[in-house]
Amino acid sequence: MPVWQALIYGIVQGLAEFLPISSSAHLTLLPWMFHWDDPGLAFDVALHWGTLLAVLVVFWRDWIKLISAGLFGRGEAVDKRLFWALVVSAVPGAILGKLLDKWAEETLRAPLLMACTLAVMGTLLWIADRAGSKARDLSQMTLGRAFSIGVAQAAALVPGVSRSGGTITVGLFEGFGREEIARFSFLMSTPIIFGAGLLKLPHMLREMSAGTGEVTWAGLAAGFLASAVVGVVVIRWMLSYLRTRTYLVFAVYRVALAALVVVLWLSGHR
Image (tube, rainbow, N blue to C red; front, side, top):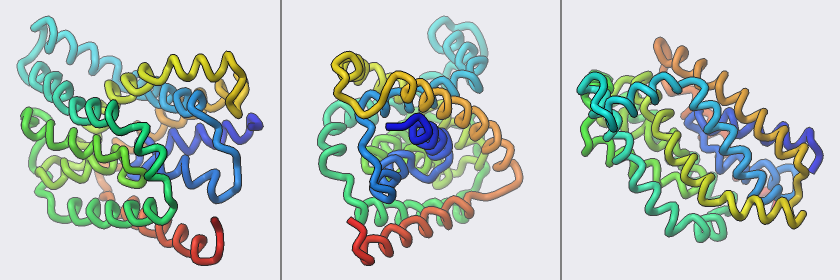
């Protein structure tokens, strides 16, 4: 895979991981649309670790404060509660990811299925944005609410659902503000991306050492850096954008992309 393709993959990952539009769908549809080779597991891990770095760059102070409060009792009670809410939110994704990740990768990559999930979740995001009270902030995050948002995160094993899209949608239905639930969703991504990357790291190293993948070390580095840099920009932009705007543009984009996939399929693109 050329380095320029690796850069495009990295940019797409950095955008789609944090915007509620499904990174897994975009990374699957990209080679399908342009007839590119599948870059392999090693590259997928590198892209996700790039977005993990992006989250840590933006939220490292938050994580120090949350860990200090949650594990060592140093800080405010609200930070301790939020830390454990984040721990609970990671449980459904960790369990289902361990049990079903390989099955999902092998069976849930059909373009029409992704078109369906993109459109349905886009519609639900729009409804949640309109119907949610937006009266709650993260100080009102309970373990029960965090678990339900974590279930939505686990559902992102299905490409097109979107990890951020699912968690934000459920959070909006539960009455959290737009920026507040986006912040919680970004924080939620830290343990789940780290855990998934750690689980796949041995396979990545074997693939790279054996030279069986489609990407070189240069391509790996390019994708990693692109996803990290773009991820930082997107997180900061998103939190600023949501202070005055709605999620409508993302809902419309999802439905439009779903329509494009259906049109391409019906026109004979396989």
